[in-house]
Image (cartoon, rainbow over all chains, first blue to last red):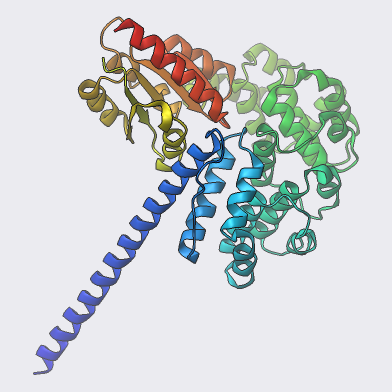
Length: 307
Length: 127
């Protein structure tokens, strides 16, 4: 009798989990379909002449799908009419929805909603809340708050970036460069490189690498000689290598000599990928590293790293 | 060659949907697929006049996708690639492979639509 009860209980549990999984999968499928529909509708509306039919969202599920759709479109295109995005956000009450979602979600979900806020909002109404979130101990949350702050007040970008009390991470830099590529952030390169703030220097160097701006090589050499921050000096050396500039400077040689072996090896790989010849590497680095670079250049790993 | 068929190859349905929405009012049939194999199969049956590939690495992995999408020595279908990669070396490699247009993300949707519209008109004249 006990065995029968046990088997029935196991079967009931299995059935319950299978049904729950099916329901979740179906909900996800419907949600994806809803989001794709919104993406198509908004994308078509941005190119429509005259007054386009705007998509509507009434439930929280529809609003989330709408926000994801708007974020996808805005982050992949640069000619979107921001007034249209604001209009869609206004008629669907997306901003109050985001603010209410920010109050009760986990850090991961709050980070997502902060990015959505940056997508739809162009007002400085939420600057206090964003600045407070930028002090958060959660790295994802403070990064997304920073991106949202830059989106909502792009004119104050330099001031915002110089005031942050954490080091900019590759995630933040990637997002900021994406904003630059969309033309959503007015940043000049020289003030970033000449600033005493290491975060601005790091961002400036990343921009130089992304857009191959060789007109600022003098400022980058200055950074290798004058910056007290080793992170900035290392980044400046990598940037000079990306620009195919000469690395035969006293300050650069000094820094190379003080680097740890793994750091020098990483630099070797970077220089090899940028096309520095073994002879040039030999004149720059000690015997073990230049031998390592020769082996790396001769190996298939270089080709793999290129693709 | 069907002048009204456009094929979009994208591993991400969301990004394909952006392009689909932007080209919706061109009066053509738009088909989406996620893998190069599906693209080759669909291309042989639908015979599209424009193929839009939304990832450069799909072509840079040695798959010979372009020669299989374009088995005859004609210049049809026209192939666009849109990707985040912006290194000169990648762009030159793609153009040498036979890609007709290369655009980087973020894209200008109105410009993409204008280019696609011009390509469709030009290709319909060749029919």
